[in-house]
Image (tube, rainbow, N blue to C red):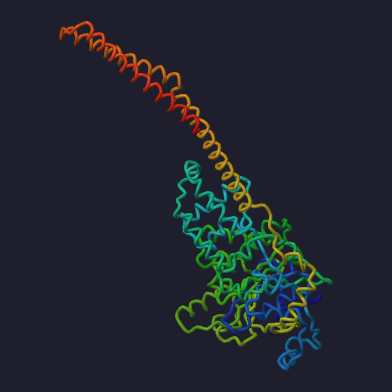
Length: 529
């Protein structure tokens, strides 16, 4: 709980109240402990304390339990028993202003991002691409940027992959080989991502980060992400939250150390963020976590053991709450030792032994002091929440969603002219042009054929002259042959005369028949046409 005297009051130990220093709350923190030791309740206590101080928070709700922060709590025997321990007489149970979100749009306002906003690096991690496939995906994004084509959703990315595959030869010299097999592998990974429901996350309208940083009646709004279904897709969950951090980092201005943070981000099941993460992406995560505090954002990781967090990042988590750990195996014992070593030792007890003997609701606590140095670790009891512990009903959730100031802002998806529409239009234009060119070529070819045929076909007079010349030649040859024959045989002049007449008559008749035949064929041919 928050009050002017105690500030961000989180826990109570033998030496009194343990509070997070407001201007050090953006130095990040860690809530760790085995399953069932009270991590979720600690998260709820921290979140509602920030809420009462006017600091909005974002948190992932794994089991629906955190939705109860929207309702006022009630007195119970357990709480009544612990009141004297905290020096509280009459707790003022109260609800926090809450907005429910859901990547799938089922249990809250949809949260969307465009594929371009996600970027090739995070998308490659989400699809678990290898180095070669990651390289081709980067090429696709570069080409889209060069062409000024927007990639909003999965169908846009699929269209760009198909287009780049068909035009791969044009980019080989500039970007390297783009094989059809690699593009096909990316397409298959994209299909798997779509089957997991990622198609509901990618699109418009994209989420406005400023909607996470609102207050109502002086209280910070609690932005609760329904993550029970999202948790079934660990890569989508962790990549989504990493995208959200990246958006906060790139969008918010530098503000330095404020009296209290502008936003507190709780990352539950934090170990998922670092599983199967490339060195390049891990470096980026470290950079964002290190620098985002200057934007007024505090990040608190919730996980089972500090060993789930890389050392370079663990060293930046100044505010720590460690619940009980169990040490059944040598690996567990090593984890306990590591967790103990992250605290500033307290001579009153052995930290490693205390970790294994903590009760539910108890924790080892160390917050940063005014100068930014970690305080000595204390064995303490975490405060009880003033809001409801446990999930709300579906009716209560629906009422809160409808009463939200942003109700209707993200509920309906929006389509704009992006890669799919642009490339589809280009394909249609190219098809129309190909069809027109084909028809033009066919018409041109058909119009040339008759002209060529007429040019090559001999006319009637040409045929008649040819027939006449053939007949005359045949007649002369016949007369000459008859004359030679008579000279040799020595027949009478009268006989020669009759022979010559007969030959001429026959030759003339043959010529006449030839000419008539040619004229008839040509005339009939023209009539048929």
